[in-house]
Amino acid sequence: MKLNDLMPNEGKIKLPKRKGHGNSAGQGKTAGRGTKGQGSRAGSGGHLYRQGGNLPFFRRLPFIRGEGFTPPNQVVYNEINLDQ
Image 1 (cartoon, helix red, strand yellow):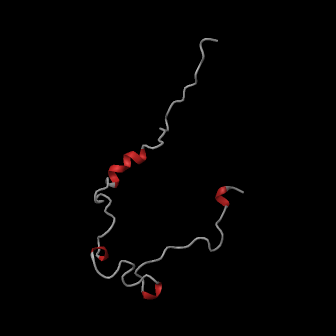
Image 2 (cartoon, helix red, strand yellow; image 1 turned 60 degrees about the vertical axis):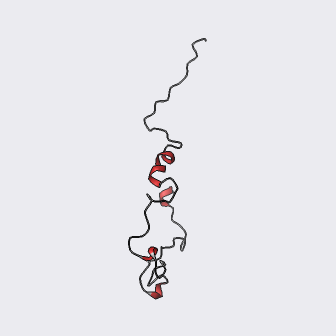
């Protein structure tokens, strides 16, 4: 048996809700956006470059990406004691 042979338990995987597919589906009509306002309009959300005072997400990426980075082609040198 290998790791790729393992399957999750029956009923463990839960599919995400398909929003806006009829009222009986649980997230129909407004699909969880509310009735009126800026957030209910098309095109709202997903703007990671405007965060209102915080450092924008894309300017934060180099700091996050540089944390714990080791280059894949890094050469590891062994130390040799020349006094012995």
